[in-house]
Image 1 (tube, rainbow, N blue to C red):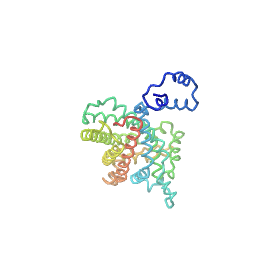
Image 2 (cartoon, helix red, strand yellow):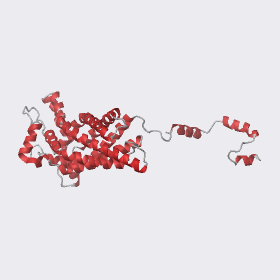
Image 3 (tube, one colour):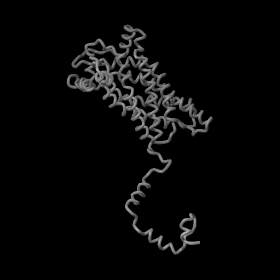
Image 4 (cartoon, helix red, strand yellow):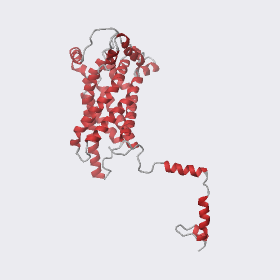
Length: 349
């Protein structure tokens, strides 16, 4: 057998007289491009490795992107809901933006958007960091879905409280701009609140920033418990069913499946918490005049006023846009979260 034939046949041992030449070639310096290629291949993640190893970081990134996506895409529906719930349309403070032009319509529908975007990413991220952290600490994967429900409720409640600490100030500014106060300017609405520091003191300014914070938590906890408990239940039940019928990997949930379950869960939760949402909107829109010592109505009094002046329909103002907004938003929010989570780590719930 010749050396030439050995070079073209895989697995054939080369003649010993080629070994010195091969040794010399191995000692020769490699071209620069080859060195860079080798380094690049060594630095590239291997197949099966996670893009982000820390589950905390995945929760942070996925939650932030999900919050930003849903707030920006569905903002006009939120504006419609706020104006339907507002009682400022005939007030001296309200000045709804002109809508006789395309530019005026867009400015009107997106009034307060900067404030919403400022709070959406950090509040959604803080929610999922707490939610996923508590869930991982309390839940045993071997438990059934019914046994995990209480842990989901506790995790979602604590996550919502953490999110509200960031969301409420931006929500106050956003809703006042949406309702037409200060010509729909979020900056002027914020300056109005910050101006209370000079006239009424720092404590009053902080209290105004967190105006309606208590009733917001009252609304968010039952809403979040319902939404996330149903969402987790739907995901776990469907994943188990697919595992039994098709042999799909246990615990696997796709982004589209998560979006559908999030939409159903969000719509159910939004429907029965609408009265609390109306109450929150009315309280947040009651701005404090600089230097004024008059007390504003609290939650109980506002609720009595709505019932006396508008009856039961008043408690469900904005029901259709709220359910439509949160049903669609639930699909976008939880679908985006699941997609980014799967992209960064294991494609499991």
